Length: 256
Image (cartoon, rainbow, N blue to C red):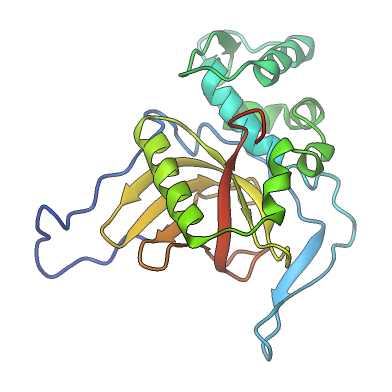
């Protein structure tokens, strides 16, 4: 996310932005996966029409359509796992057992971190070593198709709904939560994606969310909400031309 432009005058107390808030100890470069969710298509923007176009990726990717599982699992590790690099690293069988315990853990009110993963500083280092094992154990592509909250995307997203959702996500992050959100355009489906929000900055005109995007493991991505238009925007990325999107939280209840 680009930092806000510096004002020539010191903002008043009413105008001053709220500092970044979110998961109190979530570290993007420690608590996210080292590998990427691959896209099945190569995306580009037609220079004449400005429209997003796509062609099948060749060769076909071996690990695609896992953004839902990756975003959820990153949060599961933040909730349930405590990494201890001072201990000896485990063997594959032990890693498999620990991963399954983390993935199957119930959603707690706050981080419990009762599963100790020895030999590593965090999920990024752990996933760089055990990439193939994590890919097998953290959920299949079918979970993206059959995630229980997918029903919501077919109904209209009003500006009032998006305002309410932005305020609710802001509140969750200010209280130290990590919401997983579905980012989409329907029925165009120029984007149909899931990311993990981990911090936020509230300004008089915008709410700026910082996100872990499973497609972009090397850096965080910014999701912006404009208060005047009550609209979310997602930046231009290798798989999306950039622009307005609709957003709602998933993995938060029995219907989502």
